[in-house]
Length: 508
Image (cartoon, rainbow, N blue to C red; front, side, top):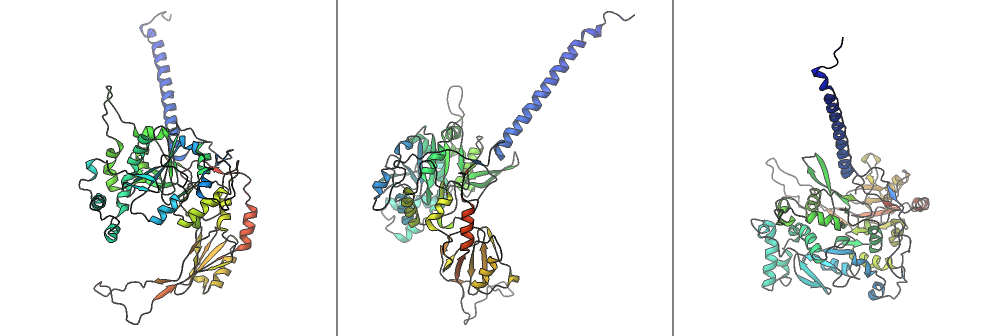
């Protein structure tokens, strides 16, 4: 007969309960692991169920929205600028004293023309006043460690000494030898810190450079669709440093086309560890990342890495943040139905002209698209342009076996490919045909001398060229497939505004 009680029977329920607890803990652990992977994957590759495009309904803050620009002064046009928006969005301009003055003037005659002194923060490597705006030397208060055994800061010290002795800008030759690029990378971290300290708690901080063209109406529309409390870092993606611990490539926002940091992002970036008594035990970001700044080429890259290390990854919004200049936009499906937020390295006169033109083109419930911007230069309206380079963006160089010997041959070669919309014949001694599937305005480019390749003797020394050797030259003639371009534009009528979603796979 089976016993009614045995010593082992008392432990059976305990073992069952223990097994259930272990099972629950295992399931919870697996769920946490999967959730962590999903969050991490979201951080690196973008969220699930995020559409490629958002048909956001937006409204212009300008009033009147559009004006007839004929005979209007800058003051007249700026009267329509929505100054109230600057209570929540802070523009921050980064520049250098040694930059081309024509480029600086174009910036203040266009993108920054409507900002009063208190509206715009300007950070540079030299304290001065430009067009009525106070320019802050953002490097002046950096810790002593920036100067110690740092060859990059020799140029900055030299610039300060020249200012002190009155020779800066007066001694043109000595001033020109100051390499502002070497010290530019040191401005990024302190300018973020100073922007927050000077204009705290703004919703968004929009950072741009002297050769950045900003379509403020579109920028305001865009930023109105975001929560500033979220840690947002937005711009045009560029490949950043490799995270060895997690074995992944990171991305940063290219500074040239501009970038945005939300209030949430800056607060997270600037936060420092402290004791229970409130005393900081962590150095500020300008000190924390100095060793990396010394070895990295670029400040925007280091800023992106600093943000990455506090859990903020880049949200890429190319092509809306655009590294191309106005004359270099390769109009195509990538650059057509999307709103344009910025351009980079646009010609100074074009910056001023497109700024005025923009005031006449705004529509209350419709942002300015690339297809609208096409109408500024009308690339593809003309069939041929001499001394002009249309390049080969989204295209290729015709192979040698095509045996092209003239502009006409290059044109026929382009005609043979249904997607070819433009071409450039590099004549003279180069005899090269470049074709493109994009609609590009291009640049003026007169005939150039092509250097001969160096020849070396048996000992590796460069031979002197023959005294009777003539220069080699190349000239540039561009053409467009006008009928194809007209048809392409009709077929792409932009029935929906394509506010692109965040991506680091869709890159420049």
